[in-house]
Image (cartoon, rainbow, N blue to C red; front, side, top):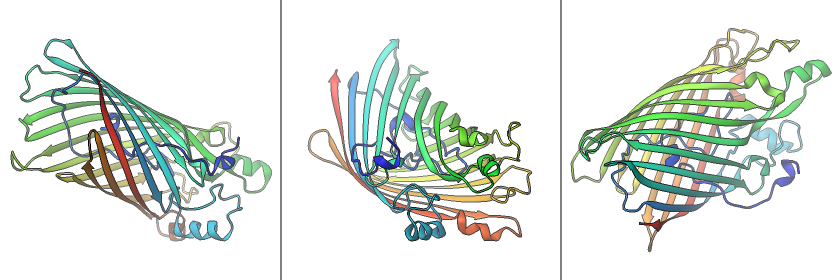
Amino acid sequence: MSRRSSAGRSCFAGVPWVAALLVATSGAGAQVSPGDTAPEPTAVRISRGLDHRIRLGASYEAKYSDNIIQLSERDKLRLKANPDSDRFIIRTADDTISAGNFDFRWRMRPIRRRETTIRASADVYRYSRNGVKDYEEFGLVVSQEVTASRRHLAELRVWTTRIPDFYSRQLTDDDASFAAGRRIREAATYSRNEYGLAYDQEIINRRLDARLSLVRQERNYNSHFDERDSTDDSWSVAATGRPLRTSRIRLGLGYERGELQARGDLSSSPISDDDVSYRHHALSVEIVVGRLQVEATRESRDATTDNSFDVFHFMRHDDRFDFRGRFSQRLAGSFDLFAEFRRRSNDVTFPVGFELTDELTDYVENRFALGVAWRGVVKK
């Protein structure tokens, strides 16, 4: 079945962030990141002795996005005017998304007075009108307490996540276009693996925590875009604290820095292939008041290609902004209701002489979500 023919299906998909991705970093792609994978919450949260050994969790979320592949305003007008153009295989710029998350957590103490936690999660995303965007994500995280004392707790985490198949957008296949003597566009799809290591340290008991993390993301594009295969290595530091011991207010701050290195020009290609490599850094702030969480991230990306003929990447600078507000409310029993608003934007700057390409790269996406989550105990 083709990706386009799968449009119209309705199923579950995962919540935009899960605990297995506490240290997830910014996307590593040249165009867009998996649209439903939110950035890492800035706050550092060190576990403190769960009441039960095994827990299960599940959630369902209904979302609406007004720009599912983060098109520029010009491209949205093009899609509306001619949805059958080979520029697009989506049918609409906006869509509703069904999201489901399934979560398993097992706590044990193989080392005396030190807890070990294994957590596995599966997330499924389904788009109602654009099935080409459907995807799944799987995660596994292992946490190990380093210190035996509950005071100044230290914890080490390792994790991995995998997205088997993710659709980005239609892109020009330069090699095929050169051979055919005309422009040929193909679907840019890739698989993504992420590997991470984090060290959490409580500095002031129940008042101030800090985290240092290292992350590698690997993307493997389909054969039309081998030059975009990449690795993104980054490091980040984060801290969270409570101004008052009894306060429900929590403040967090995080910084991340890294570099994405793509394959770039292929020796087998008769023409020069694009190099989508870039350096990036980001600053995040978070405020939590009771059940209300507000987070903002500002990321800068600087392309590193030295090919001046690559007008979409040479000396390119991206300023990305990500704002998220989330509110949750406990319902009866083990159920929670939550609502979320998220806004993402990108503002691109090119060197003098390339300003006209800005209208093809700038975008704004607004996303609204409403969902319910359940957590249950299997074994005490």
